[in-house]
Image (tube, rainbow, N blue to C red; front, side, top):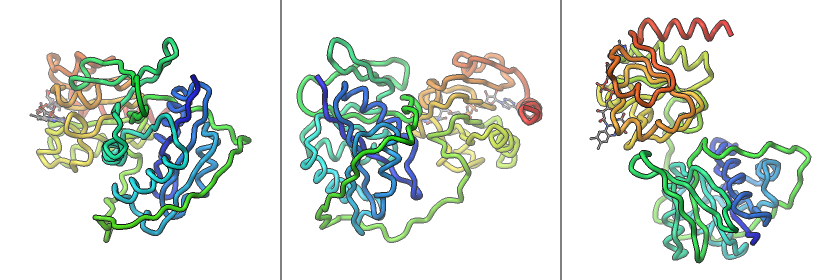
Length: 321
Ligand code: FAD
């Protein structure tokens, strides 16, 4: 049976994050031929509506308000509740991002609905929509479906391929006036970290360093390799705890969960908590001095060697391509 699915477009620095397009693709699958309605929330987001439509949304509703210039869970929840009341969807899909992880449970509670979080695949079986999600830190997957009420899910970035952009596609972009009031938190100032280039959670290539990198300076060859590959730098908690890099780079159970096309682990032993954040990467390359290191058990390609010799060699070779 065809359904109406609402998708939140996530805006960062004036453009839509890639996960928004992945959410549209997921919504298309969940809608089973029905309607996909994009939602954009912010201060001046109307102009981004076309981008969602060209990636597959049938129409877009925007909620613009001065109080929505910065994300607050209160403000966004009020905006989305107004859209949900107007659109009356059968399902809602967000990205499983920092924003999605904060907002979706709050909204689900307000709507008295369930929530399937961190979905990595969506399929149709016998007329039902089946959601796949990792459990036990990624050691197993469970399949879930919602039998009653709102179909509410968050999708893990980099797992569901976005639809190809069709620049000729058009659709209605309407604005909804919402009364945003009584916010319990107000953002006074946003202090942005110096940009390290590619966003870690959306990167197609990640070069990650562990305690084997040995120092802040030891990360330099990894940064160089990441730059040549157009990727991002990540780290194990061991490297973050040792103050070789910032915690924002931490990958794992208590850090970011990533699924790039290529993950290069340098001087990382492969503790279970680290694997929880990266073992679903499409291709894993491990560089480690210790041939017994656990990381080799999840690696597609293993290089036993000193990372300070191997990484510069790889950089030189990739530079030639
Ligand atoms: P180590 O285990 O010390 O490994 C360093 C590796 O570098 C070794 O395998 C060594 O052989 C290799 N090496 C050394 N020198 C070189 C060289 N020159 N060339 C090549 N290889 C070299 N960890 C995470 O990463 N992410 C998490 O989110 C996370 N969450 C946690 C949550 C909890 C509740 C707990 C208890 C732990 C968590 N941990 C997490 C920590 C985790 O258990 C490990 O301690 C950590 O991942 C180890 O980091 P590491 O692999 O960099 O260091």
